[in-house]
Length: 256
Image (cartoon, rainbow, N blue to C red; front, side, top):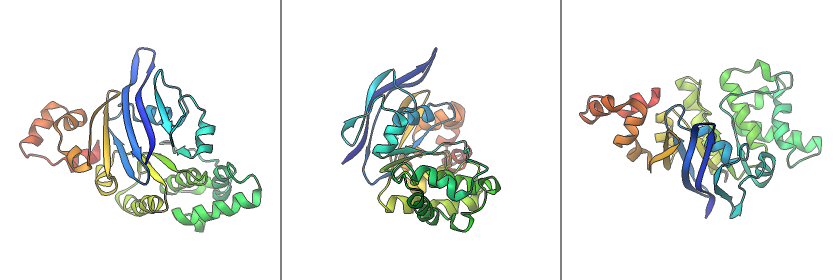
């Protein structure tokens, strides 16, 4: 079943064409990735999908219903939620209270929202810090909190915006099974990610965005060897060197 369908969506900001005629389809139960260099339009596309901004053209369907122009709140209520690359928790509140903010969407009673917060915290590895102030969390802890707040809204489709950004290699390895477990629980995931090793490990399919346009789609393995993708990330000269076997995409893609 197609959970999300994006049809020829475009959005400009002044003279900048941030997203240009993008179409993609996400099947229920999958873990897919949206990749591309900085400034490619990935986060703008997430904002269009999740109702934070309206497209200038095109349509977006979620569970068969047209949600083009529907508010972010209504998208979340229907089961489409996103995280943000820059994590901004309510610093003076506890971890539990932060997660409960998401839970209140479907559980207006405080007791039920707090219980939901504890359940989500267990899933993302925050159970031991529930009563700490969010301001005391490490970068890795804040990333988990951002993930938990989104999960607390009980999404069917979760858009993860660079949830691994800023983490060290060991923290990334610890986060990968958490993401896998979310999908195993029945949540469909589309992730924006620059850490190519994680994309290769997690994603079943990937779309590549460059200068607001989709330039390639396929399995992560096929994406990592495509000349257009390599040029978009690294430039024509580096793509030529890699084609000659001088440098593997895994190394450069991780740093992109």
